Amino acid sequence: MGVVLRVTLGRPDHVEGWRSAARAAALAGIAPDGIAWTVEGETGDLFGSGGGDVLPAPVLPPFTVPKRFLDLADSVILHRDPQRFGLLYTMLVRLRDRPQAIDDEADPLRRRLDLLAKEVRRDIHKMRAFVRFREVDGTYVAWFEPAHHIVRANAGFFARRFTTMRWSILTPELTIHWDGETLREAPGASRGDAPVGDPVEDLWKGYYAAIFNPARLKVGTMLKEMPRRYWANMPETALIPQLVAGAQAREAQMVERIVTGNMAKSLDALREEAAHCTRCGLYKCATQTVFGEGPSDADVMIVGEQPGDQEDLAGKPFVGPAGQMLDRALEQAEIDRSRVYVTNAVKHFKFEPRGKRRIHAKPNGGEISACRWWIDQERAILRPKQVILLGTTAIHSLMGKALTLTSQRGRDLLLPDGGVARATIHPSFLLRMPDKSRTAEEFAMFVADLKSAVG
Image (cartoon, rainbow, N blue to C red; front, side, top):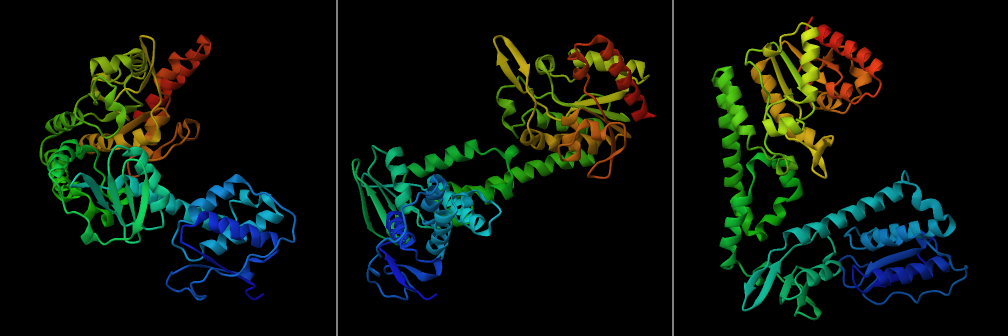
């Protein structure tokens, strides 16, 4: 089918213009390959810069589409993909005949539209995060280069956030001005039109350097969330190379102490470093880091979940009720607790306050992953002959993925680094059991697991 309708939109982000034209075309029964979309003044406009054809009269009854599609279209239209208008119109025609098509997440068209919308939302987020204003004669000016046509859609956010400021955001295609009451548009600008710096930037750089946290540094993640293409507009990014180098040097020095020193000193160095850990947010509420404890030449390493209330206050692992239960089991298994190194997968106490009490809360995957560095270093120093994992959190930490205790208990587990471990219950499981006869049975199985692990 040849083109029967040519639509020229006034600007590339004209959501209402596309909606109006698409609705008219769909009611006129025009197929997706029968309509050509273009934007006035854009390079590659094959049909001139006029207003396009007159929209046809409807021949089909009115219809509605799901709000999900309207929201999707509002984002996709802001993308730079030149096919976006046609892709959306194809989906609109499908929804006219089959409204449930919007729910088919396996449909290639739906997936492509979702991807375009996701890229637009990400660009909107980047603009909000990386715009930096510089003062010029009482007005704050920023330069930004968006990947997509998001500037108009984002202007309201900046007007709400910086209501009392007079500001301008300059971009290559469009400039937005705010005078404290009204948003005004102007033609695009060049980077040379934007100011280079102001006195406030030294204060901001000092603040950024002070809050930069080397213990939480992940260079790959940082570059993913703050791509280099935005760095030229952000004064603090000039500090990043030296801050990253400092963080890496600090970590290298610690690893060097671990490798070259004796095991006892290496553990002390690691414990000292862990005392200042802020790799996840649990340190904010916990009393202190609860590091592992035991002889540096221990043959057996026992890994639990996390410190409890009493461990958090004492700064030692397994000193509360669960620790006492573990002591009993070790004694019956004829394992000398003083010759065992005990630690936890997560080094800070996670809890929910209930009145004056602090109730245990299970660590999530992110917290387990953040703490894995410490447990890996403990194992690298100790090189234990046997590793015993108490519960699913310990399994998750050392295996690198969430697995059930039922599927892993009682057999040798090959760890990602080639080591071998055995899994059993966490002693706190026994404390929670209401049936005392069943508790005795489970305790006996726990003891048997410990014996088997070291046998």
